[in-house]
Image (tube, rainbow, N blue to C red):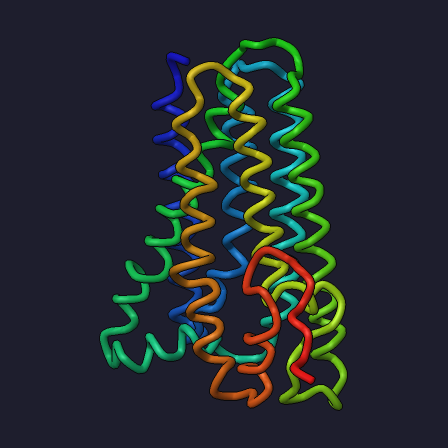
Length: 264
């Protein structure tokens, strides 16, 4: 445990440097959407730096690194493919318009460095879970966390794939995606994302004195439910897709459940 603060400090410096480089690139292309692609990669970076610097139980370290890498690479690849050649995301475009000529410097703090800080805090489970040498074996919490992570990964991956297929059909332009997993939740990808982080938290919780790392899944859940996730996303969709209000009426926002039946 003696090198925990060193690991935390180096990881914060690493993701800050990565995001600063991303900001410089965004200035060249005048597009900050790049930050979405860096999000997953930042966690992979933190996971591997921690793996190299800590002496915790090797089995748990490998488990955390593998889960983080699989999730992070898939998410970064998906977001990069989704955003390629489509200009700046409207959510960031609104900030650019509000910031005016000063957005170039505002974006460094409001977009890139802020996300670096959130990334580092959310990754506390990834970091702390690799530090402790005890218990030097897998526990029920490790297995429970793995199962929850797997369910979350399937939800996120399948729902992203379903949405990508839906959008690839020109006949669906302007329509509401309400098929597959999207028939049971308006944001099944966000639901899966939260499960992933609660799963990793349970793995970290198998180590001593790790209860405080609950801040990690709590923050990602709060961000997706109350901040830049569902509220910001639905604010832009409601006005552009007339059928979305009806979709909201019948479909749960987050936790999947059977849709409400139409009034007869």
